[in-house]
Amino acid sequence: MRPLIFVLMLALLGGCAWFGGGDDNARKEAEDRTRDFTEKDFYDSIQAELTARNWTKAIENLEALEARFPFGTYAEQAQLELVYAYHESLNFEAAIAAADRFIRLHPRHPSVDYAHYVKGMALLNSGRGLFEQYLPRDDSTRDPGAARQAFNSFSELLNSHPDSSYAPDARQHMVHLRNLLARQEIHAANYYFERGAYLAATNRGRYVMENYQQTPAMADALAVMAQGYHMLGLPELAANAEHTLKLNFPNHSGLDSQGNFRYQDDMLDEDSWWHKLTLGRFTPEKPPYFDSRPEFQEDGEQAAPNLDAEPAKKRSWLNWLTFGLLG
Image (tube, rainbow, N blue to C red; front, side):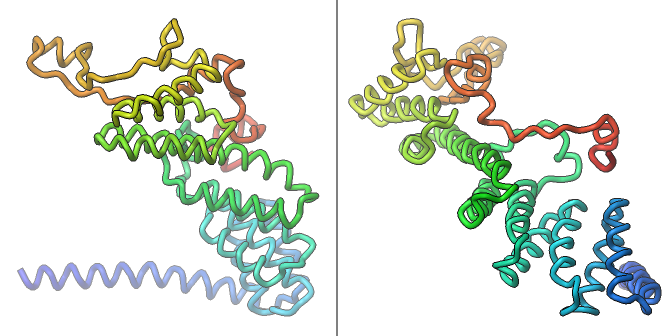
């Protein structure tokens, strides 16, 4: 057994050495190729690589340019273009770090607004895989941390550079992120209903009402509060939430044809196929669940359907075909 373990360890070490050697060879090759480069040679080569979308080579040369000419004519521009190259290569963590570094070193640079913008975009896309960038997804079920950081980055951009050319797009993304954060609170409320934590669920709905007014999630927040207060035995508070829901969102699915809230007291789902299949011997639970997005998208009078959407971007057929790698 020990000889086998020894052989496996040697194989693993050899594999690590092989991968590391590849990196060392590539680095040495790059150093040899650019050994006699002037600062202008570097910059011209970088511009050609960026134009050709050769992000790997561009990043290598940008890093080499900064290392070899840290106080040169193109040093600041190279740092800024490194932020761009990292983002376009989908290395969002590196893009965020590079943007933070540029903002810290050059807070008064004429293009620092661009660093704020790319940082926000990188945070907006962080945590997504290659295919997740182009496939349908529900971002409201994701961890809200990156969304909050992206919102703050766009907010910093607007506060420090309100007239920036990136400001209009940043505002659109902030609207989307605000709606996203509100919807995430509703997802959390549904989770707490499922766990029987009615006070926690109610507090999530109240948080949306207090912090995310005029978002599409407001309707579900009021429904969460009505149901939550009802289950906590607080009829007056439940009635207040019901009245506000009826007044502002009369066509919400939580209201019946007379405008009364459909309070759910029975947690058993007698309409489920499990109940029918077992002749009533097994009946799964059906906790309260609120998600009125589909009906709001169909009814323009209840909420503006475009508020939950990111700013639209035109994409060519080649972009679609190659999952965004080309075009």
